[in-house]
Amino acid sequence: MIGHQAEKLEELVSASAKESVKKSKKTRFIAITSGKGGVGKSTISSNLAYCLSQKGINVGIFDADIGLANLDVMFNVKIKKNILHVLKGEATVADILIPITRNLILIPGESGDEILKYSDMALFERFMEEAQVLDKLDVMIIDTGAGIGEHIQMFLNAADDVIVVTVPDPAAITDAYATIKTIATLRNDISMILNQVKNEKEAVAVFGKIKKVADANIGKGLDLRLIGKINADIKVSSSVKKRALFSAEYPTSQVGRDIGEIVNKIVSKLERNVLVTSNESGLSGLFKRLIEHF
Ligand SMILES: Nc1ncnc2c1ncn2[C@@H]1O[C@H](COP(=O)(O)OP(=O)(O)O)[C@@H](O)[C@H]1O
Ligand SMILES: [Mg+2]
Image (cartoon, rainbow, N blue to C red; front, side, top):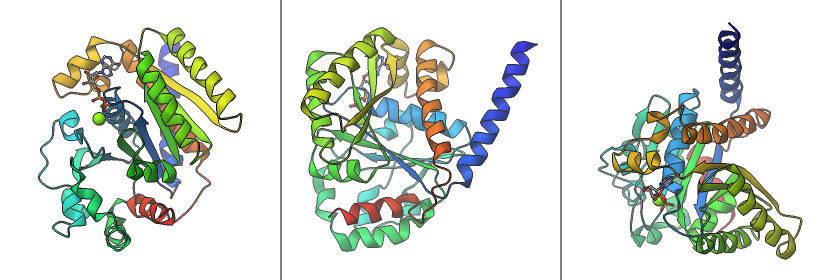
């Protein structure tokens, strides 16, 4: 009985979350980045996007990893054209969108630095006009490449939230810290997800170390937060191999609950921002912001 009531309550809360998020006119841009490659950015981006969409939130996920765009593999979909075709004028934004679920669309990226030739203002402006098809999105997740190249910095600067993913090995931690130090010159709020940890205790300990070094060297002005962890689990890697999403396959397992907690934090952040209205929605909003930083 109590379980049933709790479920009902959860349903109500989630329905009101959905409503309040929908009232918001602004798309929230969440950039996922890391110092080192292979730490789980695409795994986390795709599962996060999927879980948010399952809550009735309109989600877009943009594959912005120029070295290794692979979200098509994560979602097990075939891509014909991508953002490069749009920038070259060979396709419209609407042409390249891949629907994943009812509330989730993928904006395919391009692996290869040819795309950097097209990063001039006039093209972005044309792109922006077309990107209005994306204005209904509540959230846009941007899966960036590792490291801190110039084009990645633009995204990190323009996003509402930047999440740095790391695993607990020393080399990855060093690279994550270097990335945080650079991002801290662009903004004063950075979130972290500790991936492939043994448990919460390890996540908190590793985060504590990074935070201590950041406080001492970057300064207290930086608001560095841990928004969650995901345990190391063969369920995650086997799902990736099968081109499936672990959050869909094992929602009640520990890793399913781990991502669920991160999703809940993001949803409550979205709710707190309901009063923010702006015409900077969709991809056009993002590109407006990007251009401001040129
Ligand atoms: N929590 C985890 N537990 C086990 N394996 C993981 C976990 N997260 C990621 N992996 C493995 O790491 C690999 C690299 O992850 P990926 O998301 O592609 O990294 P990135 O996008 O940062 O390069 C995945 O293919 C998966 O096998
Ligand atoms: Mg990746």
